[in-house]
Length: 220
Length: 220
Image 1 (cartoon, rainbow over the protein chains, first blue to last red):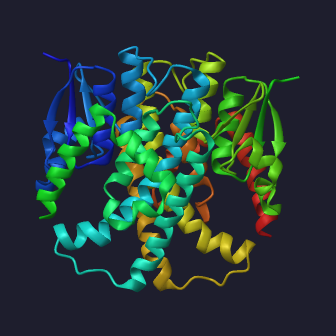
Image 2 (tube, chains in turn blue, brown):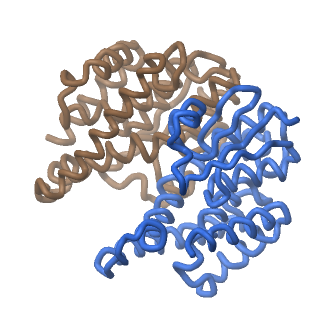
């Protein structure tokens, strides 16, 4: 039995990023579903493991680590991994870490701030459709994010300015993947070719297919 | 001459956090002022060093690293540091990394989202004072952040749930320090005693005093 358990829900972008890293690094793990649609992340039992009540969470030999990017660093050290996804090279790792810190406010926020009121609110929580007045500035911020992705990719074709795809590409792929209904990928050929390349990574494709199937069920 | 240069402005919270780490770790560095009030971070020269046009930036033997938390990791590795501020212990480091990732949306955003319209806009850029209607939700988010800090400190008295203060305490200290005019520290005794303990760290005190003097001049 594995000493490592990943807690989360496959609809969560950062959960999928950690899951992909585990699979791409051939690290064995158990998966424990946290059904956030039923508030499973708010229970006393889960809060004992993760006081922040967030996903993903790993429990490794009884020790809890939360926050997806911190989990990647912890796993790379603990399992002594040195692969292209999160290499040991200090310079390359600095580029990846810098991007993962930057992405919270500049990739994840613009995606979630659009997804929540536009899709999740009306389809999951019975909120009214948002007005154009409310949507316009949110969409503008989202479009700025698409421009940032294009500009970032222009350097080496990959997110962390590396010669090969890294975990930073996977983080952005998972965020953008859930927003495909909110913009037309065909209008952004540079993002499209990158997106399709990342999407085709077998371990990731399996996770994404599973996610899209479950998300379709949740959103009805 | 030191092989390391820190670029930034002492009014910037993350610049001060990196500066404190360098001083607390006895790492020699040159300091290069980036006068953001004159747009120095937007010049072609600076953009070549840091395409993200953010502060802080370090250039170490010709290699650029941006994003404060990524800089801390890079410095700890490159200078082989293992001190209380960012220890090598994998478990402790995971707690610190988790907090530094969490803090972008949950500490820095609520601070800056209040500071910008309430203080910086009117005092630096001639924007009108904000109305109570605009301020109320921003202040509410800020107060939620104060509650989060209290809850976080309740575990071990320090931010990263560690036995000693770490770089996570310094990051939060620097963010909260600039917002002292926006709330009454006396009403939050748990935060006050932690704040005063961190403020008294000699290397940090020197930086903070310098910052407050310069901020007073900028805000007039």
